[in-house]
Image (cartoon, rainbow, N blue to C red; front, side):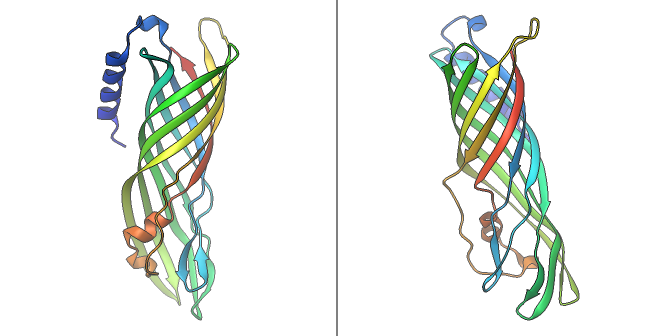
Length: 222
């Protein structure tokens, strides 16, 4: 993912917003792990397929805005997470094995969040993110004894809402924190025509995009 320009832009924006001394503002870096499951889609009349759950790792940067305490700008991204389709059975009277087809997902994001303090060490976060998502399907399908190659990819932008909860503790001069979050998007592409997997179109691929995710994270204040 190419996010270097995004990082520079967001960090510059944070500097412009700051109206209090920088050493009084909170900044955070966190590593996260996220679990998703692609959505089921139709491969024939009354027959659906769905990829397994997958796990991906990513990084977030957060900076408090001086003009609005406890409000943060956020940016980062998640690396590829991959899982295989699961259908292996009969389709329209012929055997089909889709289990060698991989569904891969990744994203970069820009967003804003509000961290509501819960005492001196915990916070409940409300986040709105614009995610530039990449989704791909690749591999081979065995349909009635014939090997078909699947190679499709798409990118698109969707809004996501994320709810987080974390706690900070002291470790010498460092202030690490750990937390958990859940995310969801209200935007879903519906599948159009049912096509052969070897001729998969963008709309079919986007209909497989995950709608929810859950994760754990850990990081440092600086």
